[in-house]
Image 1: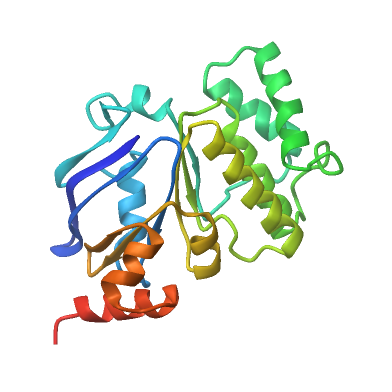
Image 2: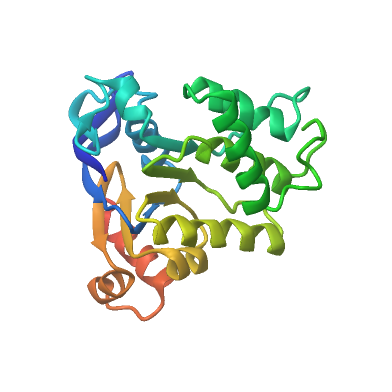
Length: 242
């Protein structure tokens, strides 16, 4: 479980996140939605320990990520929107590298690399250097890095952004498998059809605050709209000061 408890963050006196609280439960897929500038990226960075909240705290399976950063992060797998691959390493070498960073033995890393290559459909690219990889190929490598240590909680930032149909389906299937294994999955997205299809719960943020938190049906009901996109727009607009 990932818990945000009244977290806030300012930059040069400007509030990026004002007071955000929500839970992402084990065995569920939670979607974090919001327009540009709503505070999503800042929130995610606090959740995985890249930024320290000014107030409030983040718990990963009950572990405070500021107090015990390494222990909390060992229970997290994170795929950011900036994949940050090393162009001279192969896809398989990326998996090995990140496995070693998590303290896995060579035997463990090799076995896990083989599993992930199959899971993500990477056999044709596993031993190629990542320089020149397509967006879909880069996404697969980044997801493999995220999952190498079998984390109990996974954070995915825009995992299907810019992907073709086949790679999108792979990502979607992996998210479903993670949910079936009882893993906490939290992801941000602008694609409403993906959110409606994958999420058990949706958290909508606007102006640095949570404006809605619940199932897809609850979000639609709260907004009085049948279409999720219409509900999202209405709830976000209602939160903007007039």
